[in-house]
Length: 101
Image (cartoon, rainbow, N blue to C red; front, side, top):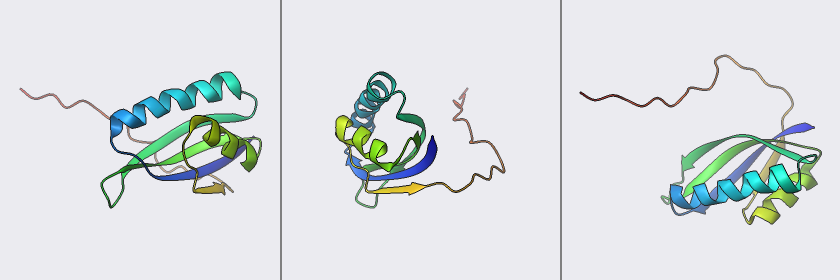
């Protein structure tokens, strides 16, 4: 499979909506298209208009499979860019719960 970066701009009003879509996306990928696409990770961003967007890392057999996954889930995929190589300087930070006394 090839690795792709996918930009989805302003698809959701809030993180609750995003959570519902994430569940559908995981199900479609894992159950309907397991040999065609793999969701690796997503970075959730706040768009200039306040809506929620994502920058996603997926693996897929080709761009068409990535687009079909998005169609089945009901979300956009405005930009799909093949990844040429990966350079990792540091692992992604892990969100940690802050303890307040």
